[in-house]
Image (tube, rainbow, N blue to C red; front, top):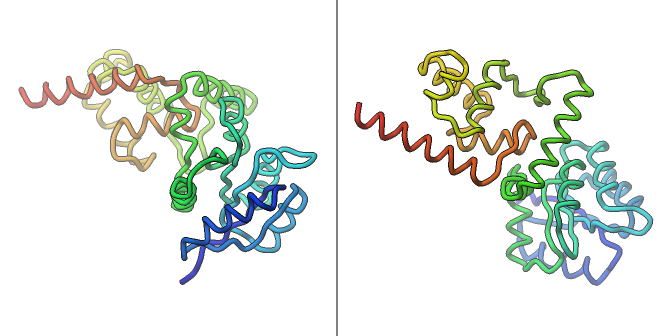
Length: 248
């Protein structure tokens, strides 16, 4: 069995040892290296090429987030989970900027740690839920992406593998506001069928199954700001459309 390679970065040997024991309870995981400093972490990552790094947010002379940024530049494919005694919006926002995939408190139990590691190895980003449940964090993420967009002179900071047309972005923006297909059509002066065609194209390009998933994607990427109320509005709009379809 090909085991997933892990690098542990923490300046406390006892904590590293405990974390290693937890991880290696799973036969699919192997801790290939350990580091106690940022410089050592960069060296060990270059030598052992781990797939995932679990790293303390505070290291001697440097922050773990600074090291995370350097690691991501060194190897963009690497996944990083930060560890901290406590988590707040400031640290989560900094983690998002650094390209971190997850954030765990140091008192997390073994099952939570293993679940997080496997989720990240599957390609999931554990910070998505933090953005979706914290309006203040969502606003900061949105502001950051808007600032980046302005500096780059683009309308929206789309990743290279996703290319939405200006009209598709308008449809997505209307969806964020909780509008139904008919309301989107009225706002953009297009037919309801044209709205449906645009939405089908958006879902296909984003590789998601439904509009709620598209909204989550938009928030995670910083294209839109949405709190819990917006989700409720969307669910109501979807419900209205289903009822209308049933009647027709």
